[in-house]
Image (tube, rainbow, N blue to C red):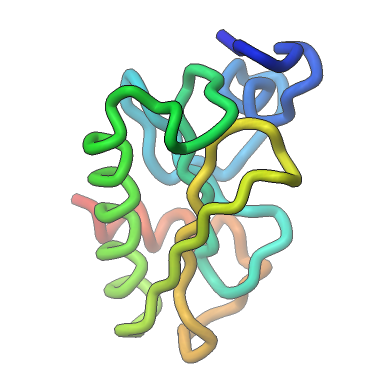
Length: 126
């Protein structure tokens, strides 16, 4: 459910509801991770809370949130043969808390191979 922002306008809430398709790589009761449609590198992912919060700092279970981001980063290291995984928290472009997690420029793979990259990351999280 979206707070502080119209649920009908929030693109990430639409992804959570299934109104907009996404290449999901992780999902539990509270969080969702999916590939960015304009990736900086292969496997560039967004980690969001399923409940709408404006800022990452507003997410009440922030420890669990960052554990999900950590899980994604460790899987990306293996999936794309890199030690260099970046994270970024900004939030002005989409008003829904999100963490970018993406491999460095030395990552092996095609950044536009969404289905393949999603599968590589999911496989490494098992």
